[in-house]
Length: 337
Image (tube, rainbow, N blue to C red):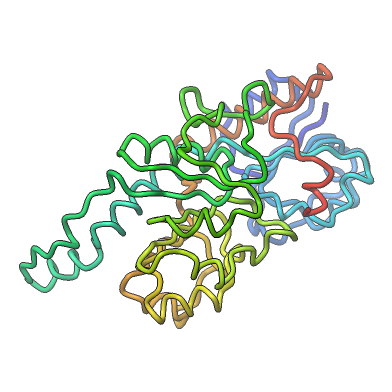
């Protein structure tokens, strides 16, 4: 099995892949992950590609049979004709659940206690013990638009803080027995945490009682712009929005409108419309908006590489043995549906 690695690596991590069945292993971290070419001989012979983003010459990889990406989102695989070529693909589902849940917990506390204003007061030497700095999360309602693995670990932490959990998704899925990667002891595999579960057609009933809305669906051709201004206005006035998924899931102008007129009480956004978000973008100017530079998944944490290499190594063994792969994407998902 010839494997090429196009993400960060160490000798110890590459040895994990060798022990998992990589007979021939090449590795090179591209200087520009968004625009790179594999050497011709690598492209011609590679059977398994382990990367974040595919190379520009992926269509020339005639022997490619499996691609393992290091991200949870998979829009970089759309329109590559992988299904037609018989190429299977797996994502990094489960690797980011813990850091994103911690980011969510931090943003909930920040928004709920208006920490931005407290810090501005501290910098100006202002002593202000206003009631908005002393509110509790316990008893408030957090709704997840999408209830996959990222949402489930965030829900577990929020539940521990005494919050009420509402979830909206296409089905109330039980993940036990499914071939998904997860860190032991995390998440909500049996979908037991939500106090209420909502299905398509119940958007208003879901949104109108939330204190916080967290957007947690993958970006596909179907979900782009799925959170409209109309939906944001279904939230109670003063509710807050969190987005750790992808920026374009939310209508940009609609989000700006509900922030400008004060309908939203605040927002914490880790996923954006452009990278980097331009310094003159209006989102930077709202005092009640927390912008983080797409770090909720924490790819530079000490846990990231061991987890994604664990996923890849397990999939190499499964691939060689003809067993179901972890986090395998369906043909519909690869088509962006």
